[in-house]
Length: 191
Image (tube, rainbow, N blue to C red; front, top):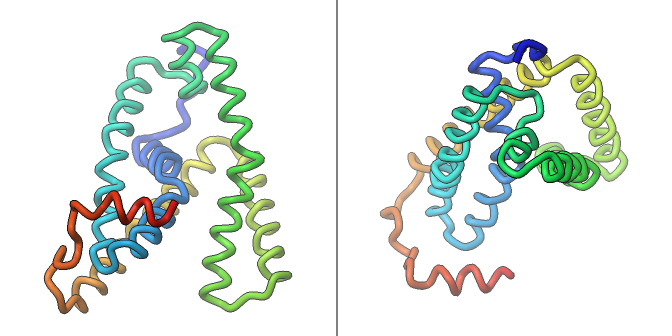
């Protein structure tokens, strides 16, 4: 602990954890749910947040009792040894070449839907976003955490606005068409 410089506060930790755990799933899961459940898909966001909340609590407790810049890899190392700690670190690192382009594609898809961008404009937006991510990454954990806290706040505001607009325009009773016993059939249909 003596060599660890505390750079993050509670709000920054919440921002980092929420964007890390929810990630692009905060948009992908409700979109998939909309295909299956229509208006009832509005419940996908609170359910997703409720399912992620226990994980966030566990990480908060672990981080408070065993502070380390190593994050999950450090916790794995404490539980299972240094070999699996290194494997976990490499697994997290290996996600970046696959996960970052996928996240950039999702973000660019929103830009295309909102602004009608052409493919070259999408590429410019993706490269610009990549450069911004790289730059912020070089500025330290505090800069990244501040940005992710702002992003998390904007996502919450967007979700609240969508909920407000949808609930105020809802003309049918909630859950009228959703039959829970049909849920496995709905899910199998989209595999």
